[in-house]
Length: 565
Image (cartoon, rainbow, N blue to C red; front, side):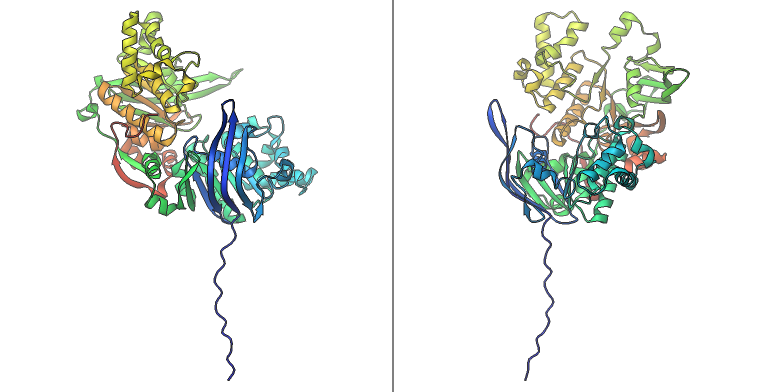
């Protein structure tokens, strides 16, 4: 009897990774010698997959991305390791050889669209250039294809945009242009290095949606480099968590989020505002019924317009009104151009309104002149977004914190020294920072110094202008906890300006939403977030990343539980 062979089903063969990294080690040299930034890491990215490389400043994520595409800075060196792109070893390739695959096989979407486009070339020529460099098209044909690519990435009026220069486009538009360049030759792998960190939340969502749509259409793999846990968890298939150049944890995103194995991963997830809806503790001021005298800031029908030359005017703030109750936090939110910054400059008496009225602690700002205006500035102090840019690099920390006392109060030297030391300890810094200069401090420490300087005059109001947006997630959590603690201890009132609604939901009692200079929503944070009145507010809330893997609500910490940075 003849036995007939049986056709057994063949086991599915997993696809080869588009990118396979093994033992990657990167170092940087300076006058003090070599410093290792990435320590022998291993990972891979499969076709059509999004792998998120997450971590804080100094984690090595950007160094990893730059090493893969061969764009390390001059003092950077790929010490060792394997980088296989479509099964071909590219580690150690010369720049000329890498030029042949950059754009065609592997592309980069950089972080800062403002500095990544040539300011003296039109948009159309810059997109057409990538086609010409790789011999895909040239001349009018390349230009026509460039316009089609601009249309493909959702730019309005692509023929007009092709004729414009980068300075004529918004940040979101410029990022779309960079995406058009990145996808022009349908590469196998796109490295998106913080592609939306400089963008407003709704623009961020549109850009990430676009990258996802193009990935599905072309089957392109994406290595997403980001410090934003909300973005990473929403958009990735797998997560790789880096700290100090070493992988702490990697796996399927839902597994890492649902059951993190590493303490650092757990800390990152716990500190991410977009993943956690924290329950803000009630302030003392909120517990009793409000009276008119409780309103420390009253803004009524505020209008501010600017001349544009000739008879043209631009209305930056258009009939905005809000009140801030003493001892509470009021947030002003909105995207670029919404009128937030102009509003706080008027409230802080740095700008005069075109019309309307601002009353701060019973003082009508329109009546303030000379010495009265100077003394008013003791009541209200600003903390800016960038702590490095707002601190004089030539002064010691003691000199920076002491300076407002020299400007406003004739205080004896011994008393000044004592008050500076007390406020430095109040913001959670060790006294040995007093002799240092800003460059010797971390970003979080510098922001604590900026807060100490603002508090040294015992103000009643702090205006916090994007004061945590430049900080890593764990440092941001520490500063927010510090602000909460200081408010409860000192009875401070905060006017908190932010484009990050996840942070606003965490720290604010009340909120005003601005769009195009107009007030479109206002009220208690819970009411505005729970039942937004305007379509714009709904769009802002919908665009908050992290919905896919949001963690259970928990109390807001009164003091920082991490190390003070």
